[in-house]
Length: 513
Image 1: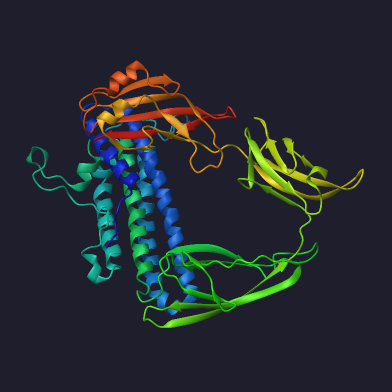
Image 2: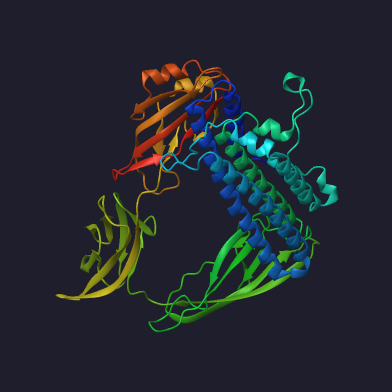
């Protein structure tokens, strides 16, 4: 059973929390408290990601209910129970976090952190003196039991849930036995206690995700196995006239990338790619309605072949004008955006192109649209005019493009955004850089400033500020003596791209192997 696995990001955040808690025994410095705030922000972001993932799982349940309610309902009911248990515990944790923040004077507007974040008594006062800790431990253990009761008995022993609240093993520090609440909330600053609550909220969402995913997979092991979901729009026609109603069905489909069904159209089998048949045809003349169809032969789990009939229709018409972006359906501020324009029946040298916003250059069907820095986001309209007769031009069509700013780049060190590296690899690097990921334009971003925070065992964190992407000699010296388990954080990173707009980038956290 694969329940309870942590992502690399979760493992890194958990490790940082342990390291920072250990550092508290040495010195409650502002740098350490800032690092707790950084970890807490990361936990809250991960919790949000889990929430979005869970919503996708419940949507899959609702789809399954429409297809076969009788088979799906028992598992869906259990999934809703898991959601209820976790929502109740999350609500209780949110209430505790609110109380702790209020005990610390609330959130400071400038720093976005707790006003009295160094307070070493508030967490113990609420969780131990007022008895909220034992109450929380009981709720966590009860929720864990309720969740595991939703798992098939044969799978429970191997089903691992991160959500737990066990007392530390007996004979701990000083030979004393500690309770779970004492070990976690006694003698720690307020910001660390809030971070721990965020970690528990993260564990709750992770547990809900594990249970819901397990139940979804358990609906029927004998059913067809699909590993790809796709949004599909099916319309009776893709060509309509002005004043004619357009209608379409929008739904979610599933396919298998490992099973290749036989798809027959017109007596011949279609080529299959990742479980999908590829039907291709080149029309040679206009046609109001071209009907086609065939059969999909699918082998069921019991070995029999089931045929599924399908029919489709499309229209063939001559377009009046075509405008398309070469790389994307949007245009970006500060870069030349390639635009291709054509109008069948009109020579390219007789076509004129205009933009409602931005500067167009080029000719013969190939243009570039440039939106200077300071341009407003929104839309720009590309209009196409054709000279159908000498001295007589007619508007052939217009297309609107969304205007966006260049996406946020990602800061990297040694080509990674965070994780673990050997000390020798760290020493070999001479700076950090920023790059755009999954973006079609080849744009360069320059790091203009950043901070290096060095955490060495037994020493106060050291902060060194720098300008530009390269390390200063102080930074190189500070990283020259790193040893295993030490940490470095690159924070307050700013980079500029071709549009000249400064971008504040996410921090990079590196642990020395």
